[in-house]
Image 1 (cartoon, rainbow, N blue to C red):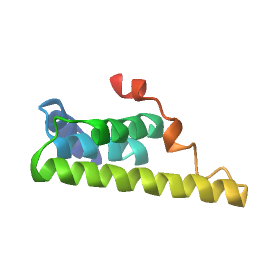
Image 2 (cartoon, rainbow, N blue to C red):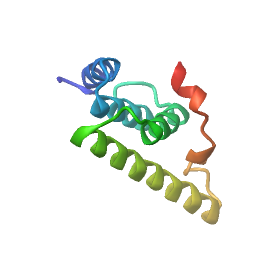
Image 3 (spheres, one colour):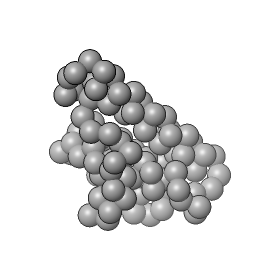
Image 4 (cartoon, rainbow, N blue to C red):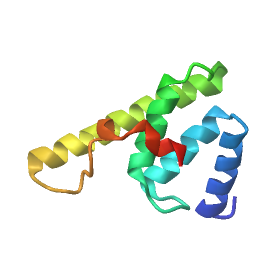
Length: 104
């Protein structure tokens, strides 16, 4: 891909075709606004969907689930640190994100 927007386009295409890595890449891009407007709420919901998915198999599925787990863990750490430090830079709790957000 030439840039983040093109990478997002191809990741989304892969996700639409059922690719686990594509699903994770779209969620990650949404979390950090890579090639698309940032939408952490939707990203967290997508990570949770990946973790709960039973249809993801093979090495790509394991990698997508593991990456999603660590992405949520990292977001949780940022959220907790921001609460302890009294800042707003940590955003919202990733665990409050609704799975309905991923249906848009």
